[in-house]
Length: 117
Image (cartoon, rainbow, N blue to C red):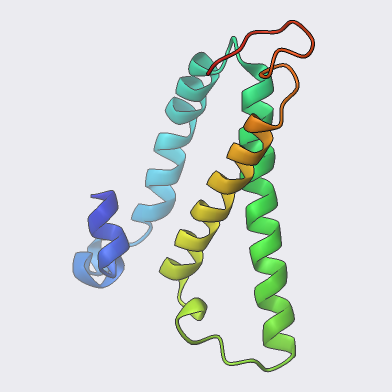
């Protein structure tokens, strides 16, 4: 359903009977997803912080750049679509996370910490 919602306009295909489904889905999945990630990252707080800062930084940087370009009246083309922005945000977040992970001194063993690779 996630891929389907990214490929089509779900609100139009569901009709008016399902108004508010997105907020219900968000509130229904927030707690289980938060608990799952909390459990998966309980021994890796450092990587959890890296993940959060990578996602937050990517979102902030992309929105700032788009706002700046819109103020300069630049034609954004396909970048003005939410799907393209979401894809760019994911790519930027992955690159930011990998940069943080591979430049972490503990991962490289500089402080005698665990080496994952």
